[in-house]
Each structure stands twice: as C-alpha cells, then as structure tokens.
View 1 (tube, one colour):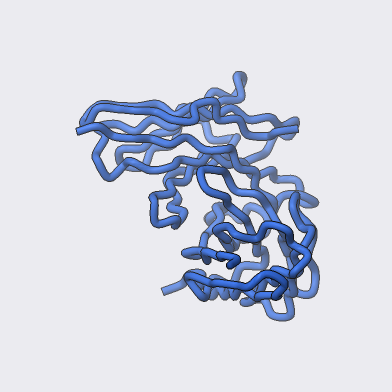
View 2 (cartoon, chains in turn brown, yellow):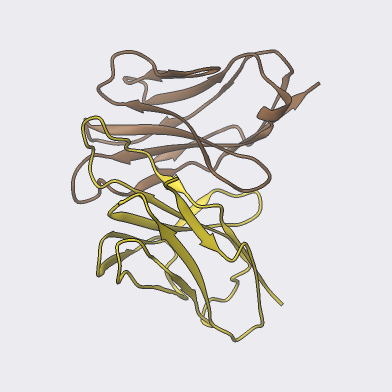
Amino acid sequence: AQKITQTQPGMFVQEKEAVTLDCTYDTSDQSYGLFWYKQPSSGEMIFLIYQGSYDEQNATEGRYSLNFQKARKSANLVISASQLGDSAMYFCAMRDIPTNTGNQFYFGTGTSLTVIP
Amino acid sequence: DGGITQSPKYLFRKEGQNVTLSCEQNLNHDAMYWYRQDPGQGLRLIYYSQIVNDFQKGDIAEGYSVSREKKESFPLTVTSAQKNPTAFYLCASSQTGFVMGGSPKQFFGPGTRLTVL
C-alpha cells in the first residue's frame, strides 16, 4: 500500500505569492517523521523541513512551513513569498520509528512547482 | 565537511556490461540506501543497509547487487540482467533510529546519471 500520496503532479504559482503542496500519509504507528525535499533540475535532493509525529507545533524553516494535521494524516508544505528559484520538484517523505523498519524512508511521487514571474 | 560523494557523475555503459556506482559517506551513518529515479518520476528503493555486512532488497532489486564491507561505502553494481538501467541513481545515508538531538533525515549524494548505449 502506498504510504505517501502527493496528488498534485504539477503546480503553478505567481512570484511572491504563497503556495501549498499537498501530502497525505498512511501509517498505523504512533511515532514517525515527515520530511520535505526539493529537487531542482540538477538532481540534488535538498532537505527542507522535518516534522515529528509528537511535535505539537508545526515546523517552520524560513519561508517553509509544514501544516501538520495528524488526525487527517496530512503534512502539507507551505512556501511563502515564492521565488523563481523555488521552481523544482518537491517530494514528501515519511520514516517510521519502529526498529525493524525505522530506517526505511517512503517517498511520494512528487509535485513539480513552477514559479511564474 | 561531512557529506556523501557519488562517482562518477555521468556514466555510459554498453548493453551487456556490468557497471559499479560508487557511494561514500563520512557522516558516520550506519544506514545507507540506493534509489533509482526515472525522468519525471519519484524515487524507488533498490537496496538499503542498516549495518556493515548486512543489506536488504528494496522494491526494485532485480538486476542490481550491493555490498557493505565498510561503514563508509555502499557500492551498487548494475548488472547485465537489469533490462532498462538508464536512469538517475541516488545514494543516501541516515542515522539508525531517532536519536535525541540528532537529525533523523536522509542525506543524499549528488547522484549518478547512467546511460546505456
């Protein structure tokens, strides 16, 4: 069963506007971690933000924030004040805590974001 | 600086040849991973290793082999049995488990683009 679902294959946003990239996840575990990565055309994977399942506050890193709704099993990425350099693929990922699989990461299919000048 | 190196950046192979992709990390991570990425697609797990001399198959292990003789190194061999090996290959590493004060994220190398001629 797919653990991470990203339903938006492609998104467009006007420069300086905010954009939300959707991510839902599936797990029966209580302890897990959620991540967002950015992949520009060069191919490198750039870590953006992390949210632990027990964190009470939504994670923020500069212009990135993670809208974590545990009951809905969603972990949407919000990018504020979009810049042209934000144009890239964005991947949502999850890591379970249980020791026998706690080192495996599950990735979504990605969302391609294009920032329009 | 700590990080992950992959070599070469670009690799060309003739059909029927085996080829080995290098991955080295100096982050002192126990867990290492290999992913395959096809154009416009997400990451698919080939193999992962949680400790030296041990590794597990991922979702698409057929036609690939790995070894983990040293903590720092996790080379991937693409064998002639892999029917369509042209892709972008990413190596990653992470701490095992969630360590208080540590970083649970995956660190990625810059990737190797393999093309079969």
